[in-house]
Image 1 (cartoon, rainbow, N blue to C red):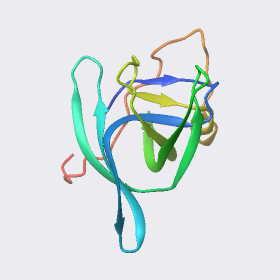
Image 2 (tube, one colour):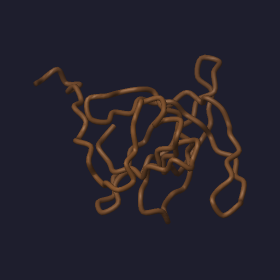
Image 3 (spheres, helix red, strand yellow):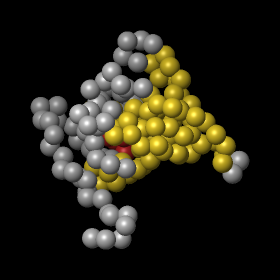
Image 4 (cartoon, rainbow, N blue to C red):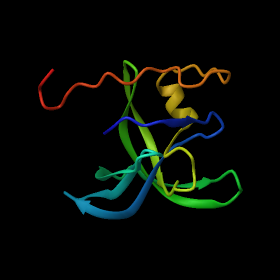
Length: 133
């Protein structure tokens, strides 16, 4: 996918991605989900995506409301690291950040959080899928 800013939330267990137009469908006998990922806060970018459905999870928001959300797994690239992370798909249009990274993603990536600092991580070093360097 593309680069974007994320909110680090050590109080949230699960990571979340801003998504709309979510549809579950079957492919080769397995459940998949198709959705529009909304990326960027100043410049809106939309990407139509498909991913295997990992599960449906009930999430309790900070305001106490419970909501069922679809869960997908995708690779997260941060600096020189890349690892699989589970994301719930949710409408985050009223949120400042389109992606929230929860504690499970932070632990899986062996990340250390210093709450006194902001924007200390360099941009990911992603391989060019076109084969060009």
